[in-house]
Amino acid sequence: MRDFGYKADELFCESVSVRKLAERYSTPLYVYSRKTFLEHYGKLQAAFRSVKPLICYSVKANSNLSVLKTLVRAGAGLDIVSGGELFKALRAGVPSRKIVYASVGKRADEIEYAMRGNILLFNVESLSELEAINMIAGRMRRRQAVAIRVNPDVKAKTHRYITTGHRQDKFGIDIDRARDIFLNRAEYTNLDICGIHMHIGSQILDARPFVRAVEKVTNLVQRMKSRGVGIRWLNVGGGLGIIYSGESPQTAQGYAKAILPFLKKLNVRIILEPGRFIAGNAGILVTKVLYIKETPGKNFAIVDAAMSDLLRPSLYEAYHEIVPVSSRSYGRSKRIRRYDIVGPVCESGDFLGRDRRFIGLKEGDLLAVMSAGAYGYSMSSNYNSRPRPAEVMVTGRRARLIRRRETYKDLIRSELS
Image (cartoon, rainbow, N blue to C red; front, side):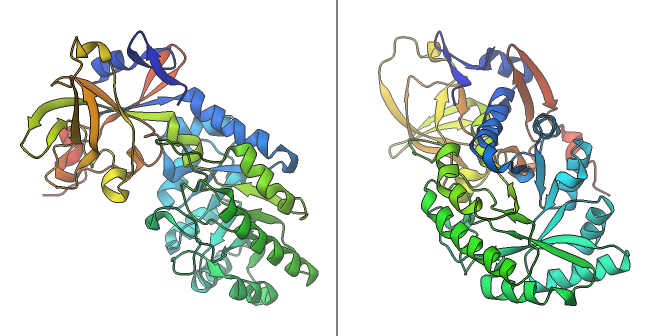
């Protein structure tokens, strides 16, 4: 996270003091680096430039409109998974022909909305969904382009909740059934079945599962083309891992080097769907220590951020580095103590980090939870009737509020009594 670093013992985002941001906007607070979003998008562009891919940023990773607009203005398309994400994508100004719609459970009204929006492709997850889209397209007197999401039965080494390409996962269609759909595509009179999609999981550090999956899907494309099936799009999904703490993930260049030999065999357009790779290390969550609680068995630092603000540690037991915003507050203390960093929510699973080492940690200190730009705010909630935090985007020496902090009135805005 090179755009987050210390200057004179104080954490900065680009050229802005994180402490000053916390003082201005209060905590908990999400802080993003615009430069990081754009650099990571650019790395994928450069790595795959030989095949000129359509890079559709995965909206679910971080759906703030300012984030979406930043990437869309740089040329990105958007990968969406709901009608709400489609609404935000269109508000962000993305050309509709750069929108790809995934998700295993698209409702009829969402499908109609996407068709009216003239999106590029639906990624179809099941035979039932294919039939539903065909029926809706007929009713709307349209011919709709779709890609078949293939489950390549490749198990990626990642958390079991974020693996999506194994036969026991709920995602995609097995290769044999996908082949039959293509060979019988004339039955779907309102569809242009013109693409193949795959996505095997998230936070994958090793190229080998991608290579196995791409090889299987490439073989399917070649077999179908030999049978006269006009496949124009191959969507290889996302899933590239990032550094949370000590990982050695593949680079964009390394990933491209591993799979480009397969892609270059095909005369098709390539789509990529990165999310975490672009957004993960572009953001942090800033929180304040409310209380220090020392017990015979464990020490706790109780902070004002909670699982309702950053769910990943509680949901996946995910590890995020947690660092002091200012080390000057430690004074002359040299004693290292271990703390669980926990929130105020009434759940034993409400923690941001366990057994973390700090020197002289005290009440009032600010902490930064690193690598929180993806699946942070987008997975947040109002559990325990907690208003969600503000979000700030930093560009060089400037910081701009891109989402105001929720108020108590926001908690009941949609409720009827």
